[in-house]
Amino acid sequence: MNASQIVGVEWATLEGRRPRPAGCNARLDAHGDLIRLPAVRLTTADGATGFGVCRAMPEQVAQIVGASLETLFSLEAGVNEAWLAFDYPLWDLVGQRTGRPVYELAGEIVGRTPPTPLRAPCYDSSFYFDDLHLASTQAAAEWMAEEARAVYVRGHRVFKIKIGRGARHLPLMEGTARDVAIIHAVREAVGPQATLLIDANNGYNLNLAKQVLQETAGCHIFWLEEPFHEDPVLYQDLKAWLAGRGLATLIADGEGDASPQLLAWAREGLINVVQYDVIGYGFTPWLHLGRQLDAWGVRSAPHHFGTHYGNYAACHLAAAFRHFTFVEWDEAQTPGLDAAGYVLEEGFVQVPDTPGFGLALDDGVFQRAVKAGGGVCWL
Image (tube, rainbow, N blue to C red; front, side):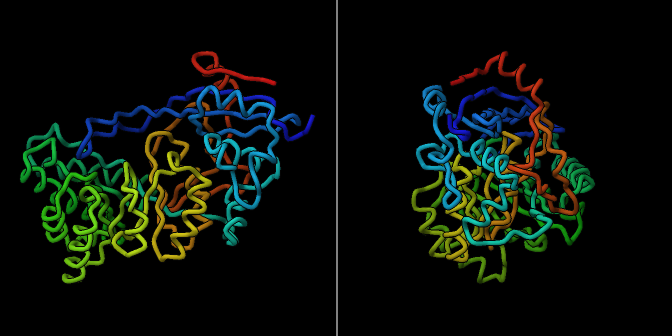
């Protein structure tokens, strides 16, 4: 038997909690505090293991058992396209077998030497519509400012604020006025040196986007994310409007059901920051995309929300791209997932130089989750 042959696959869903529930955004109801991490652990014939977030179908699980690691992964390109469902556990497995962190392996593929120690810039992603129970705009602004102060104490210096309350949850102008008041309140709470991002989840139109950017010009918004459904004509108009007023705000997009034309528009300069989801799009595809975006002078900022694991996985992309901008940080605690090597301080995540993704899996917790609703497949 080949020592690198996959002899076992175990899968389960781990559940964790955010420190406080995430509220609504412009489109959706409250997101809550529950985190669900669908995880797979791969074992090779020599006893090495690697785990990571994975949404492989049962028939794919059966097919990978017996495969040699050399047919699944190459040190020149990452995970073979046919096996991208196992992208994260395979990267972790290769890191464990080689004794190297994933960011080092990834850097070699794109021809970049990662700094030591690696520090990944990140932003807090917890500022949802947590204020809808409050009747007054002033009370809402004070509530969100208090949340911002707490997040600042936790170590964040970049804050993404959800906007678009008037798209669904409040009357249009009342919701828009509340968006503006909250942006100002958060800026005051975190100080002039912090970085503010705003995210409309397609809840604005062009004119509302301009209005909010005009009324918050003094807050120095770093980027406006998903202001409206992707439209190159509207993006061109917005960029011309920003330039005409001397506003340096960037346009970020690509998190959700992005247009197939998104990358073409990014190359043309209509979009400044590409945000394909780090889990849904995948680590290996992101590695190659980031190199392409670097060549175009476009920023990379992989989206992440809802699995916890993506907080850490995205950090390993930070070493690979010249124009990597931020890791999206969805704070949570997941029993069974040990991320003690990652330290958040002053807006950066200190990334461990331990093998793989630098995460440890508690075997007892994982095995209980396997028995409760997961499964195993052994050669």
